[in-house]
Length: 107
Picture 1 (cartoon, one colour):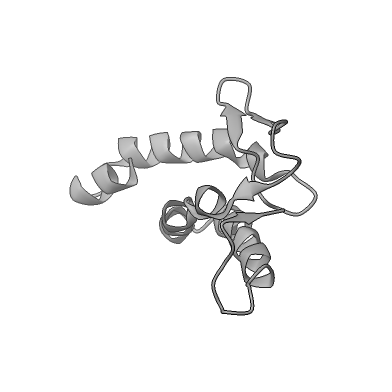
Picture 2: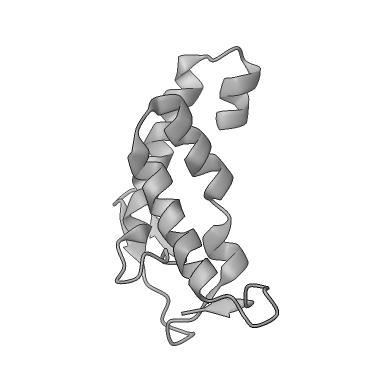
């Protein structure tokens, strides 16, 4: 939706839909460490905790919203999207291995 917004010459319909979707996703970040839950019920606006991996999540999966959420913060002026995904990056940075790479899974 954000790409459509940018490519359409900033049609507000796409921005409204992007904000609505992001607001429905935001509850997944309500965790003790800021790492998002891996599933969300968009209708209920509720994150669904992972029960199969003892709290471990894929680094790629939890970091994938960086571009969209930070761009959404930029165009709306609402820092809540930026803050949510930046907290994820803080956890990823702290989990950095000795070789400087991020691990495949983090907790």
